[in-house]
Image (tube, rainbow, N blue to C red; front, top):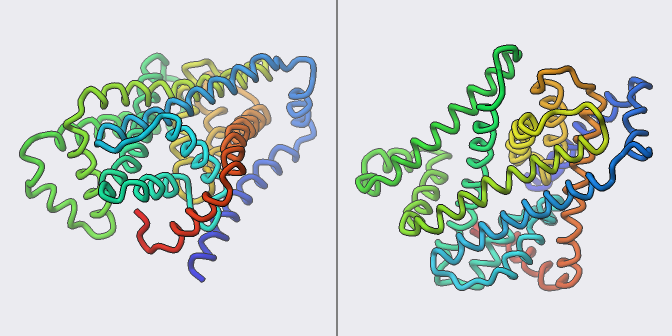
Length: 340
């Protein structure tokens, strides 16, 4: 019953958010001009296509990042398999059939094929998510350095300071955890013994211990992560520029998109459905120095969602080509109490 209620909640939350955005959009008849703009001659479809290409390249970089994480811990793996599982997992993040999300599916498949390296398989999933999340803050921090925030609203200034704090805290934690004495120190034991969050700390420290021996791979992975989130920002920028004459600058979009993706990472809806659109809408009208239309913001947010769904359709192709084996794997992962 609890599982079914959580699934229902994960569907109701994005539905409510999207309904609110659509109601806000439709409440003003003038906002319909923004919707008509998409299908008018003014829309630059070449720019839309370039946005999709940027997003596809960004997603490919994340698959390559996971591939490097896997082979760096000694698990035999092929790049084409990383792309196949990556696209399947990306689709499952939207669908989540049986409560099995993309990360769980990838991790279970990798652990199933390499039972003797189950801890290493788990570490690749955890590190992939951790590195990706931290890279969002780094890209945002770097973008904010190129903008003047003196005239920004107090709320946006607060967000910028929080981003700076998260970036510095992450760098500090990474540096401390790499010190030789931290492996068995009292600080580590204390953090791992904390209720509820101790398990997360334990997995993070275990994964970092595995990867600290591979500095060459970690440097490449860091570059791939920054490149992926930069390209996602470029995709959102080209979407906005293709549809509207007035839109955020590329630096402003490099703040809007990563921050919106941080909100989308909160596991309350499949694929960040609803939370991503709401975050893009609010940041779209708050971050830029000049005033922009909220109707345009909602239009760009929904267009970005359509773009991500287009990427998920690639995973659907892999799913239909291997439907029986994928369904069997998802059933096995869902049945286990602790699949990872």
